[in-house]
Image 1 (cartoon, rainbow, N blue to C red):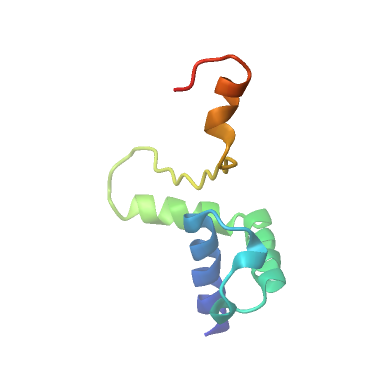
Image 2: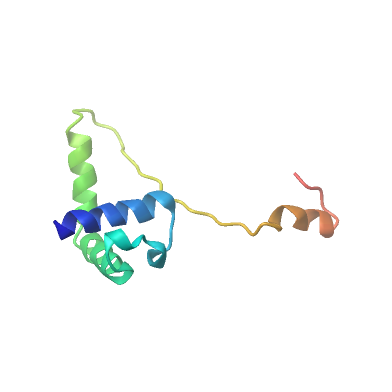
Length: 88
């Protein structure tokens, strides 16, 4: 049952763009989550999971998951104005 908790934690972290140490305590220690994610990624487990999920649909197309996370400082939008640029 711990592996399911770990998998849920890894998905939660990636879906929400969080740092590993921001994982809720219910998923276990953040270091364990990271180590499991790293180990499974190196073994290609996530790639096989995605291939399996895509194969279940019977369609030949690219399936992608975007876990991009960009963080901007709250004053980032006003920097252009301070330097003489135009704020968007």
